[in-house]
Length: 287
Image 1: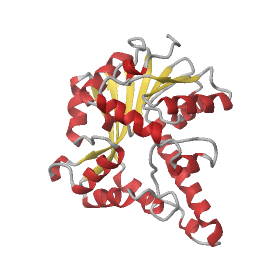
Image 2 (image 1 turned 90 degrees about the vertical axis):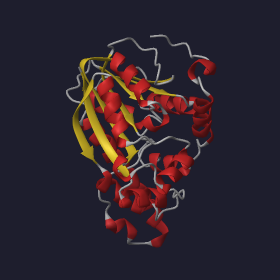
Image 3 (image 1 turned 135 degrees about the horizontal axis):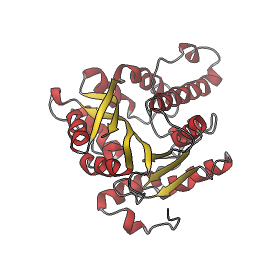
Image 4 (image 1 turned 30 degrees about the vertical axis):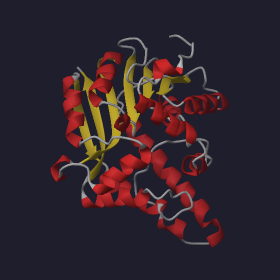
């Protein structure tokens, strides 16, 4: 595995990829990620699931926001735990890939749970530096490494991964290209787990609320059916599909009540409640 940092032109191959990288590089101080990560040093770049504790809305007003922040972080960490639960039987000698690794929280959790090597890839150079600093601070930089690479073409060896996951990152890439790369990287019988938002084919095209989410994050949310078409085309067979939509609504309801709200909370809630948007976990095996 090479340790030489690739040139940006070799990683960001299209104008769109450059714009996505610029978005995440320029939103590096977004409080919605930093404030939550400061709770315990695990920095996530995804949303949460589960019912929130209503008591966080009660009690002294001057600490209300702090209580909400801690509860949001708990729900985000719970989401990552559910993803890791579906990776299958992972041992200390296995190697994992976090594709679109953000600030590295889920990779660090995977290493804590399984004791194995984890590589994270992201097209944000800021995120690579931040996540590697976190691994160093936790004393796991020899096992958890983050790389400035494109998840469509990682450069890692064929068949080198026991498991791969994407956590709310697939809406930035072509699914057929992505799953072709994952199929190449996974050993036979290896596991891919995806948590993603996708629009509901049954209701037609993107709803107005889903289009607002696309615009906000400079992404391109896929229809639900596209995931299964692309998986099947690349020898990845779904073994578990879980609809997490109802479980994520409380997170968004709580987030709308705190200081880190960004204004995108209402479109998420509208899309989920009207049924035009789904929050899915898909686990698939490489055959």
